[in-house]
Amino acid sequence: MTKISTNAEQYFERYAYPDWLRTHSLVVGRIAETIVGVHRKAGSLDAAAVALAGYLHDIGKSPLLAGDARQHNELSALVLAAEGLGGCVEPSRRHAVYSVRDPATAPRTLADKIVYVADRRGGLRVQSVEERARDQASRHPRYAEEIARDIPLALALEREVFADLPFAANELEARLIS
Image 1: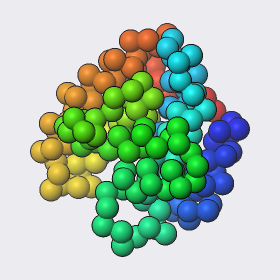
Image 2: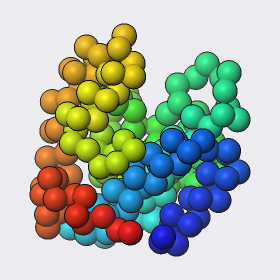
Image 3: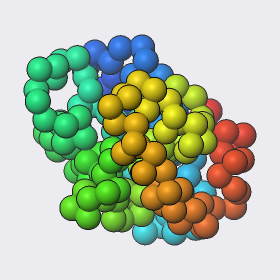
Image 4: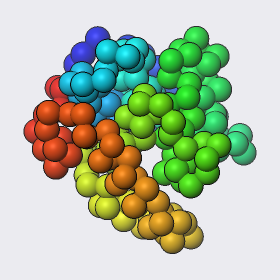
């Protein structure tokens, strides 16, 4: 456990994360923390905020927020802003699989793109973008066509993020921070 993941665990407890959400959030957070830790352009980022955004990107799925009709990424941004975690707000708002289709919500900054890619690679374990998309489509069949259309956009963002890393996307699992 890193200092950042330990900090994230406090939010997992406070927001009553179920086991599946905790597992997913730890995987995505570890991916984001690993990427930002070695990214050649990371000096321009608040690396701790980007990593924490990876861990907390789905806080809007907390059962404490059940019944709120807003999208989970919007709720995540609101909660993180209320918690005083300003550096986590936009990466969390822009992480949803469908956000790449809308210029108003598409990941813009390197921080946004890292968290988006981390979520496209992290389910309950590290996966390829395509495998993660298949898993999401199987859980949400009415959105399967949209998810399939998002794959090329997600892969383009992945190529962009990994272009400045000292390892390839398919080496990610072996490089994760423990």
